[in-house]
Length: 94
Image: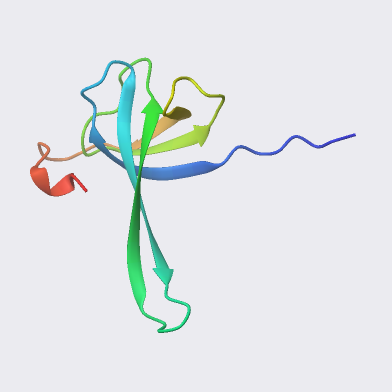
């Protein structure tokens, strides 16, 4: 009997909530260069399904992998971890 795989789960910052039922989340992670051993930051943007429009720009959110919802959406919002304290600024956009 095959065991079900756990869906991938990420945490990130919402950088856009202008689309209907969708928010764009940036996930930032640090990698080490294999040869030069210098740490550098990598960012990736995900389009996340948010049907209730609960996430807003600047919020910290958790999302998981799901079936394809559209051409670019394969992620579903689980919960909002932290809310933005101040109005969104242009510094959050990657």
